[in-house]
Length: 94
Image 1 (cartoon, rainbow, N blue to C red):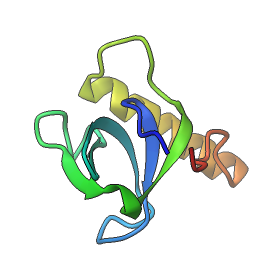
Image 2 (image 1 turned 60 degrees about the horizontal axis):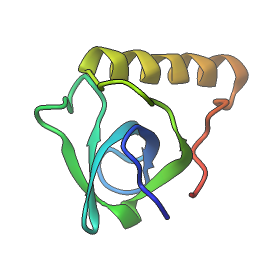
Image 3 (image 1 turned 60 degrees about the vertical axis):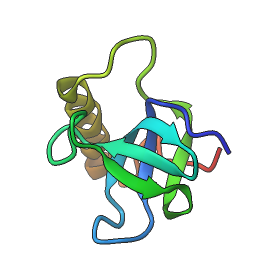
């Protein structure tokens, strides 16, 4: 599996189970996750790779990630999820 920066990830375990994040960085057996609100680029969430499900395609590409951009992408994802029942970019294992 590859855990590219900018990929969408869903938490599978812990108090943040079923919440969506964006992968900021891969660090050995861990990844750094951000949501732009509680977990910003300055204070990312460190989580083991086995506790997340990552999308195969990056959601954010070709630009510098900012908290505003991350919030916007996740807000759009939640809006799509609420209107259709399932988001178009639902995470799939890489």
